[in-house]
Length: 325
Image (cartoon, rainbow, N blue to C red; front, side):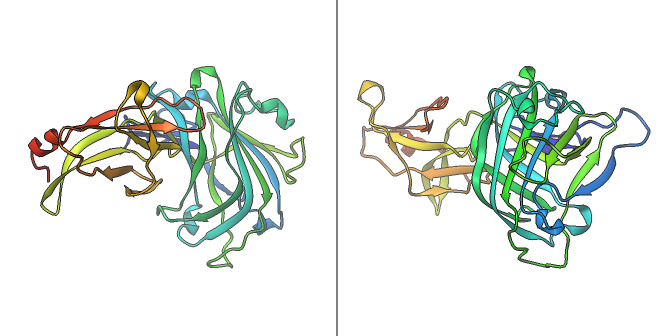
């Protein structure tokens, strides 16, 4: 999966495939002049540094941030937050219990209500947890990646994007360099594409803090994952391999010897190459008996929009395929 940097803005990055673009928002003012003011924040994850154990945190991203997202990129599949410049590579932190929700809200930047419930959209979805998460700079560059348990289908034409974080217990230990005070990059944008409200008790229904800051947030958008079949040379032998994007990770690979009403789809659990943080996963196909075929698809088993894709594998085609290095 190809990736390249399109434009750099401040506040939220979105990554989109197949276009594979990175965009940060809220956008700085056009032309010369002062940019957004850089700052850092403990909220919402690093509460133990200021002797707090729980938090409710909402941050809104205006829909205008996502105008360049391709129409086929319908699922938000990962979130990444960026550590403060002077601390990158120094912190590993465990949050023992947190939950992240996403929803489409009509509330915009600098217009969030202090009543948390008023900001939440009708499509409110738990996308992570509640559960434990280890923040570690495994990606480099001070990036803390969160793979979502459930993708969120977002359409910017329907409203703004609301990030809603609940930290039920933020007292996880700092594993390395306990003298550091971890903080996340944030910006106070002059264009007001993002703002936030919060309370320092997760059970509060009304926010005790409000400002126009926004966390730098990498938001990955993914299309419905497609399957590709190709021939690769493995130790001098041509093998057919099925590849698909690693995200959304909830789509599982399945195989059946036939399709239609006689299909018997079975989930593949062994021999899957790659990892959920990508960029892709793969399965090397076994050689079937001559004259037979196999079919493969990706399915969202929970009953959400599934959109499976089937691929026929013919052994004759495998033997006639050219060698690919």
